[in-house]
Image (cartoon, rainbow, N blue to C red):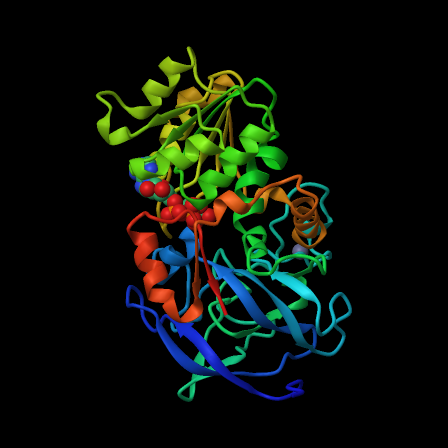
Length: 375
Ligand code: APR
Ligand code: ZN
């Protein structure tokens, strides 16, 4: 049945208010307007950011449809869309690439001015929404909204990927893989023989570990309060595991002592300002590089010992591995298909979309690295 130009009624998960449980509802999804794409979702990962957004810790406008790590097939396109066509396999992009703004035109960096994360308006580029439920306007999240059978996103937030890509898995390449693996290999450019510490061994931290290992790091220290994460982290390349709650000294001091002076590269993949400080203080004073990958709660602040900044360390934030998203993320999919990156160990669970609540229970119990929901 040709659905183009028509409203589609389908199932979607809605966060009605902060900290309430998601409810699966029947929603109406409007057709894409000019410059927009409607996607039939095939899979979506559950990322720490989704959990934090639903809890109201990050910028979001309620009610909204969460989820941003998605893979699907283009159902229809609005006027003027030329980079994808119906039937194409695509990934949703939490950071768009408009190719026109100051970020996109700069050779480095990727934080496109058309992003809708910091802060989030929950609206399309024209200031309206494409979702309705029970007669109410429902907001989008992060230019994506993937916890729905159909979504509408701007063309600039869609990456066309290889026709051979397995859509039940590559949703992870929409966020987790570029965010984690990319932070290590592309943004930090971890060097052969270097020492690294990764704070947080969840989905993003695991992908960072993979990137450190692929770059030839000689020592990778993994830090997590959940020791259930350690065996898998070791399998991915972590050489030493630390549970900060079981240490007699601050974890950053232990990391410095283990490496003599401090690590070459430190990564924060949790989103807590205290841990960001620990990562910064784990670094070698002269040339250590600290990458902040986790997204901290709105209005939280970071307070650094000012005199110590001069010694030469670098503190750098990074989203999606600094990749210019539409240009580079499809290449990561191709690398996966060519067996140059193996994302399979990151997928610990796959469940049907209607078992969303079970997926969140597993996530909250710390049992998952990534749970992928299948439509
Ligand atoms: N110290 C050490 N580890 C911690 C702490 C802490 N204080 N608090 C939580 N953790 C661990 C958890 O046990 C978990 O293993 O951090 C890990 C976080 O992983 P996930 O919940 O799987 O989240 P993830 O999807 O990896 O996202 C992490 O990256 O993209 C950002 O916004 C996202 O801030 C989030 C972060
Ligand atoms: Zn841009």
